[in-house]
Length: 180
Image (cartoon, rainbow, N blue to C red; front, side, top):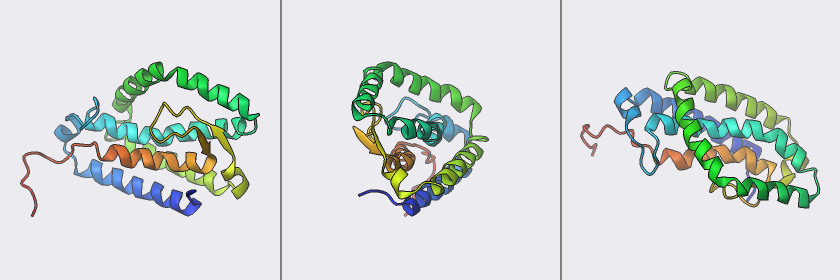
């Protein structure tokens, strides 16, 4: 089922609150601890979660252009990107590690706020016809990318990405007693 504009905006708002709560509750040693199921620390993974929104902001103009091209051109473009999955994975990993030093625990919340504000404003100016436009995507780059994505799916993507990675955080202090 296609995500609605309200569902997308609600997801953005929830992610903002969730990130703020995670950052407020995490001690520096918790942020430096390894996450679960990734090679990133919790802080690096938190930045990577924010980065998903930043990527969509950069992708939107591309989707608007490629969705107007003949479908074979879009499929060829996606195939070229899929062929570069190995280098993409390396850049994605190291880029998130390096960028987390700039957009660290003190700056990433503001970056997410500004990015979501820009995405929300742009989304509110879309119409049903533009949201229904689609283009082939490099589906090997991310588990939430599908071979063909509508613009509405692209707007919804970063929250799916955020929620997926939030489950990989290991922010609970292991020394704290379990609550009953």
